[in-house]
Length: 318
Image 1 (cartoon, helix red, strand yellow):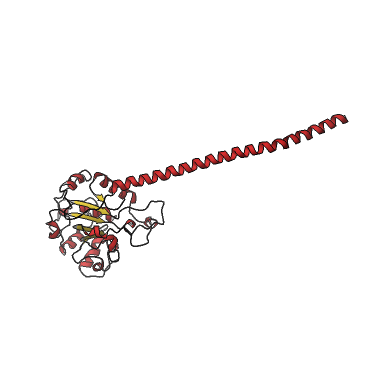
Image 2: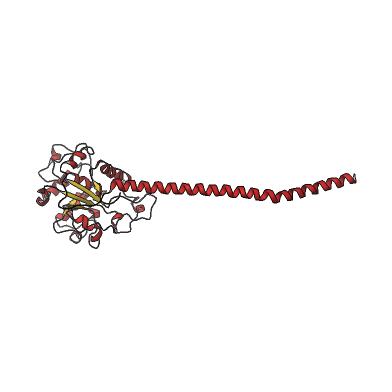
């Protein structure tokens, strides 16, 4: 029994010793396999990152190639008369240039054809205010623009991409420069130019002192979104106490009287980039637009559709 016990003990010792010896060999092998697998995983991950980066850059380059072009606008530029009208009919079903751009009292159309929609899509409920407003004002496209054989227009958005763009000189070469809301010109001339033919705005986005950022002959265009907007304009014109995406409308306006429509400064930062400013002149970010009624994605799709059809061309990548 004693011998048996000794044998058992020696076997246990031998077994343990064998495990220890094997551990010296098996351990490094396992470690080598683990390192090899980790290395392949790291390489695979690196390759994936590089592929994603390449795809992102490639996609960006494709968009830049599709939605931008070299700026070469001068008096010798051939006027593509009729092209904008032809292409816009593919985009807007009831498109026509037969109607005036701006309402006048003689266009009292809602008396015969009442609108079924309220502002901003119709005049329902605002007829009386609109009638009073048109009774004390009358505007039309200036004769200096109306008489042009070729109207080359630039619609200048307020996007961050205009900052440090040095687009000012190119923008000033257009016959008609349309600006939006209260976007400043003074101090940003190198990037956005100094010429302003029309400025579209709504009451909350109007300049308190419009003479500062506009030319003396700038045509100020009210874009009403609610009944109170007519009342606001009425108080301004009657010298009473003042009350406290336009971009798409500006482009649409240009499509109805321009022979050439180029845009600059449109587009928003990526939705994941909450800290990127959306304007070239202030620090407002995309996050601040969360409570607004702007549908950024739909606006982007609409403009890209115009660009793809060739209705407009882009001076800054979209």
